[in-house]
Image 1 (cartoon, helix red, strand yellow):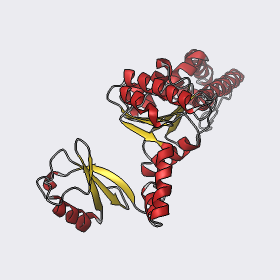
Image 2 (spheres, helix red, strand yellow):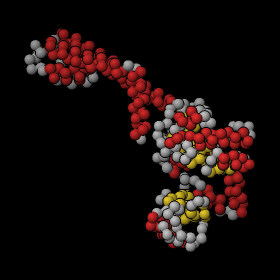
Image 3 (cartoon, one colour):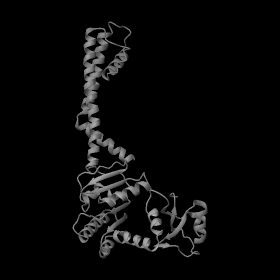
Image 4 (spheres, rainbow, N blue to C red):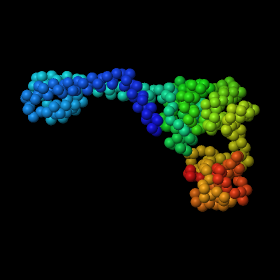
Length: 341
């Protein structure tokens, strides 16, 4: 949040400097001192109670066009000074307002065209924009509305209404584009296959190139990639992809489960969406549960959280492990619940 604020302040500073607003402010300040001094010189003869601080106060409320009326010129010279100061005030504040508005409009246009450099950290990056990307984005926001998400795509413009979603335009196989998205400080990257390419082989090849570029800049990132042809999985593994998702196989297997067991597909749909019902989550095991047999751990989660444990992750994922398995301190609990614990 602080990084984003500092970036906005820097952008405003550049806009003010580019439009010579700082020079205008200095001129305005000097005009205020000179005109207030002249006002005091001419008006003090007609109003002996007028002090120089009163004249400065009058000058400030006049140049800002507020005009409280507690002090006002009665001499012709004082009235001329007042007119000059009012004209200067209207001009100066008009320029300043325009410069500030221009800075914000410019930033908004840059965001829509993907020209902004991402400065925040610990964000999620989605590479490639299509119907699948929209679903991914919707689910991520539903699960955690406060998470920051960056979309990278080659399209010239992408308007996103969500407050924490940002767009970066460019070729994701190039370091320059990935650095604009601050990939070095991101914690997760999702590479969506390019459906516009002529065949699966070409699409997978491009995805591998993207994964290699990401891994080069951030070796610790959690990298997820969609694969269209399972014969290319080995290439993704060599690119250090953590999770390889074969989208066609996933949908086919859901259809098979639905054919064999008509209610299973409904359960899977509920678990795979954040929009309704129960979801599947993971969390680190709490210290008080370390050393507990799995059967006791299951009962503890049902009793305390109304959550069902389906597996343990520790150097692999183990669904429904042996009931006497002892819980270790490095275990990750995979559970089903209505809310994230």
